[in-house]
Amino acid sequence: MADTRLHDFIDSALRAGKTRQEITETLASAGWSPEQIADGLKFFADVDFPVPVPKPRAQLSARDAFLYLLMFGTLYACAIQLGNLLFDFINLAFPDELRPFEEERTERGIRWATASLIIAFPVFLWLHTKMQREVRLVPARRQSGVRRWLIYLTLLVAAGVIVGDSITLVYNLLSGELSTRFILKVLVVAAIAGSAFTYFLHLVRQDAEEPSS
Image (cartoon, rainbow, N blue to C red; front, side, top):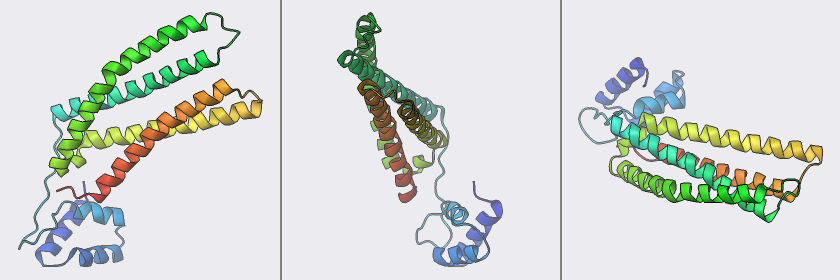
């Protein structure tokens, strides 16, 4: 929420016929940051009308919270099970001779991961398509608190996984314990986490560029 003083100033300036550029320059000269100015201006629609027109504000609803939590929950499940599935394929392709019963456990793991993806991925895809369509129809939904928090949480988790994955790779490199099996697993983790990070970072940038009304 923008500072009340900033909000009131912008409202008064718009009523006085000042342009957004003039307001931005005046506030910047007074020491307000670009982020604060943008946050204050976003509450007013850029339309030609005698008085400032407020933009609609996103409202938190139990329905949106449920759908977004379910969507991101299935996304995490898909990411984990996809990683498990690829790990199991790597284990089969490069078996560990010190683990004689690994093949049987790996085959069970493949069945479980496959079953999870068959159920979770269509649910995620349907929910994601549905919520993105609603955002396009009602741009104010971009400001949904649940949506924004979960997107940034996912970015944080993905970034943490990438950093941890890189640390693990460097540690094993320094220890001289690199193997084809290990390197492939590191690449799998990096690919999944990197894809999630790239996509949701794109959504954040898209939300910043697109008008919210």
